[in-house]
Length: 179
Image (cartoon, rainbow, N blue to C red; front, side, top):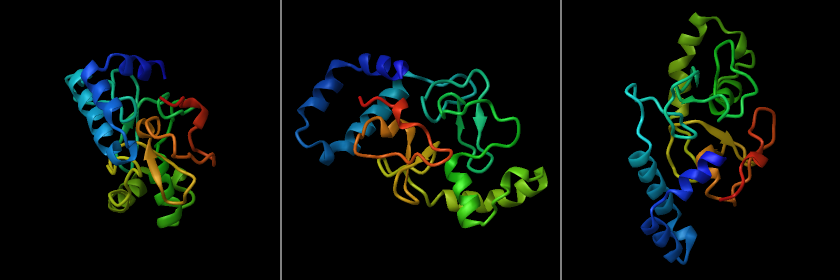
């Protein structure tokens, strides 16, 4: 959270002025999120490998987790994982696809060969799921209180109206102070 505050504190005055001049936030929220994404792209470049965390948008220099389904990469701490997974890891969206779309409750017991067989179907379903705030499909997302509706961790900090699910595996909403 302190990293997000540091980023916000470093936003140029003209971006803040543009934001404060907007009288109807809901009308312009896509613009605000686009401005924030552009700012992050310009001021937080990836390392030579080009890998950035899909939550904090910082370079992945140390251990990260990569979803075997959609291949999103994130720092374990950014996705609120208590420990680094020892086995294959799936993000919350891909877990839900496996459980509810593909009816595979024991996906965590898959062998490598089984994982490779289900990956294309996971990706086909995953490409149909979009963040309810920004509309992008890629990146690590979490559940909202509405079934089948997800949002990016970075987006939820910009939109206090979105309520996160506190079902098993969801991120603790208290981690996100409203900006």
